[in-house]
Length: 216
Image (cartoon, rainbow, N blue to C red; front, side, top):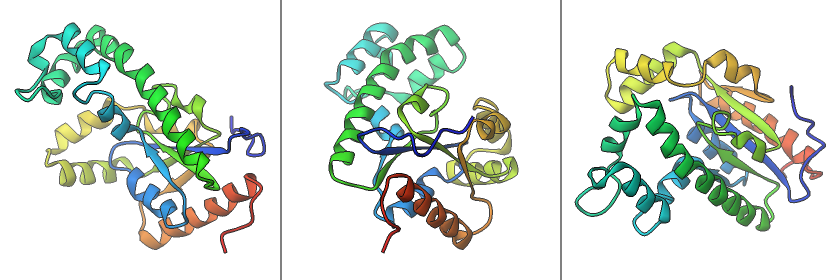
């Protein structure tokens, strides 16, 4: 069920932006940035909280062994991914370490951006629904593209074959479920002009919801 745009937090409107792999979340965030809208990237925050010196990294090394650390002491993401990808118990263990810290850091970043006086802010997260981060936002904006487009873009961007690209997509929330949970949807399967027009329309909608005039 769509959230009521008028029922926003006193601290300001937060728009959650999500979508499947290669749907163009970062492209959409940059399009909103052209309208003066800042964003927080949950993937970047996820990297922040496992940097050397962070408590999460020490806890991961303790729980999964030193083999998940590279020679320079940084997290060896490939080694950790190989452990948790096929082991649901290990994956839950990792999520218990990282997810609360990611949410805490996201909240701090969002608060900082809101204090700067933006009309609204974006929380860009590929796992917005899966991690419960949608509870942090006022609206959920899903970036949607057909699966065939996802496969082609993923194969080209990440230099993987079609079988691997399909496996990545299959491991994510189904497209239909993601769309069912959306408050707003952007179709990113056409061209840059089509995308820009959709972003401009939503920018006007979100500014109005925040009680602000359209962008001058």
